[in-house]
Image (tube, rainbow, N blue to C red):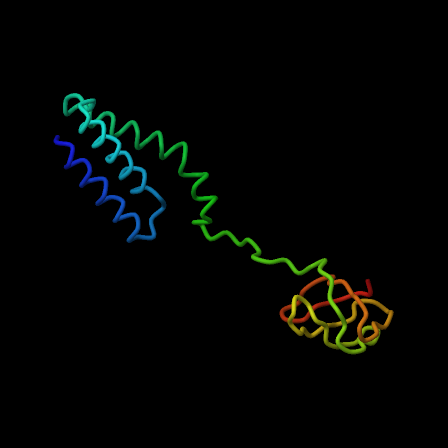
Length: 143
């Protein structure tokens, strides 16, 4: 097959991968077709059967070796990974937070509802530490 047909096939497969929510299959076949196209263009493609064998071998090798790590890196499966973790962060009390009661704290420049997780009152202006996050409420303790 002529080199430009391999290149056209490779680009078409890359477009298919970009246009679908596939599992990163067409990507490796597209890249394999581009590799065979380049090798054929420089005269290293060999006969048609060798080109198809090379296309298959490169695609399967890349699929087996690279698909898993690439899916994990791109989080294709949508596994839940927390974007940001507030637990353990330091906050500043904007008002008195009574023992076991509620109040306001500032964390990263934003005002949050807070609950005092301990039996010790937190005075306005005191540093406190986030123990856990419950929705939009921070459970804090005196630092």
